[in-house]
Image 1: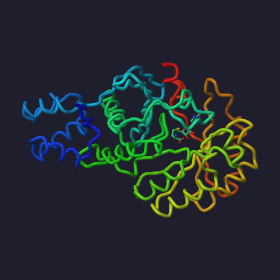
Image 2: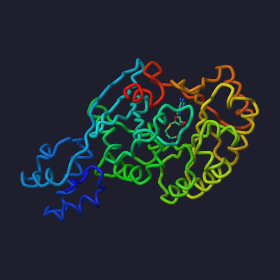
Image 3: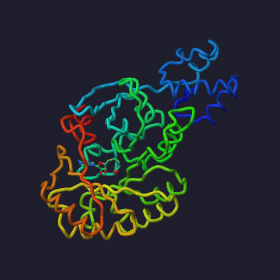
Image 4: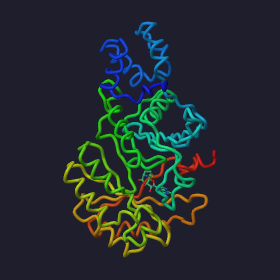
Length: 341
Ligand code: SAH
């Protein structure tokens, strides 16, 4: 018999499971609170359940837990974890400490199949999707390790969240549930390279999360060079999906633009970018691309980035240059895992 991944069950599914197995509805709530509020890692820690109930749970279910394979702490307080999954695969999680609270960057897949040329996570392709429990556990294990609460979540680690749609949506449901961490949807950002049909699907759910689009180029030609997803979904389709998303959800979209030397950083790019963003609440995050082993790209010069930003401002687009936390601890996501592999 395959045991059930109990941490991936939402409250309704857990209640159904409990009742089918001779427990009461309130037991389901007790179990849920242990798993999702108190971060327990073992059924024996669920001390308000009968011994018999705990034995049944052990027989039929398992609790996904992560092990810290490696941990790096930056001088600015940022912590990067390499977590080992139950099957031995590793993923990365980053905890960023801001004045307004702790923010966590979680992975959604082991590896990635999107193939962005500047990204370390995609080297070696996708191994598998993460279960909801494995995304949740990144936050729980980090809270356990630091003893600090996490209040903001960005789905920007290893993997393409919209390529693991159902599990990512389950994760959002559980992490925002009132008997779980009760994190507001407003405090969650999901970043995508632009899988157009999934953006429409996400829009239909009308979540209060922030959608973030990894744009990184202003023409199809240039975008195809660095982001193969553009072959399937050209910029026109992507921007149309973004317009639909804003209209359907009433939520603003944030845009990311990695500045790559000689690739996407001309004044003409700035003009085209301002046109692409026309009609959105114009804001773009400029990110000096992180050099990655095995990738030919390097960061645009600081002066070029400043000029790019000025041009955008002049054209009415509010652009910020991303402040990098954890500069001293192996940089872009995917690198720690690659070193480990
Ligand atoms: N697959 C999703 C989320 C993971 S990547 C996405 O593409 O959005 C998170 C962000 O980091 C994306 O904007 C991605 O393009 C960016 N990124 C990847 N490699 C980078 C690098 N070497 N330097 C700077 N940003 C990078």
